[in-house]
Length: 255
Ligand code: BT5
Image (cartoon, rainbow, N blue to C red; front, side):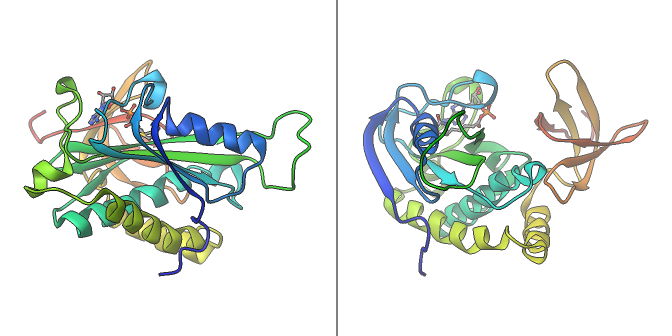
């Protein structure tokens, strides 16, 4: 597999956050394809100022810089390609079934194996660097290996699920290979349709009864599908709604 764009891979023993590092690089005008990997993060971040916690060397933690040729409303699709590539890589390296929970989690038996954080970086005012595409998108992922995350999160690690250790570099390599294949598809509508179909197929949320926490309110309904730009289509008892961001809980029939 020729990994055409993800060639600048930087390994760190410790960073505050791989997303913060890559965002700073994006602001400096670094090229698409930069990957930063850390053994440990002192300020690993989730969405909405939540934390991502993983003891040193216990997970695969990395962030990728994209400069996608996409419309603003399509930028979210970068999260989806990372989720698809990481799901496939975890499954093939560890031989366990891994599912996607919309919008940004990988699950094994409904337990959180990995979380993804995508952030958009706008062109800084007065930017005078080389001609790179804006906005940039930084997508970071934390995949649990020997850790299951904090107790309160009731997550799971790939090594526990598999029963023996996982080669971190082999896993990284598998994610980047899968990403390279899929990222190329994002640039045209036929490719995006193919990715959409793959996401629907692998996303456990679709078809389920779910609760979506939107911060100020929560919706309960049936997850019908995904819009072409990656929004969740939810049917509640009154209407069909497209949701761009939210925390999903998969409900059981009697919930
Ligand atoms: C996420 O946020 O799931 C996105 C996490 C992204 C982490 C990566 S690591 C590399 C890169 N650099 C960063 O700084 N971040 C990215 P969210 O959906 O908000 O979930 C956060 C919640 O997951 C926390 O509030 C905990 O409940 C739970 N959690 C934290 N650490 C966990 C872990 N190791 N395993 C499972 N759950 C965890």
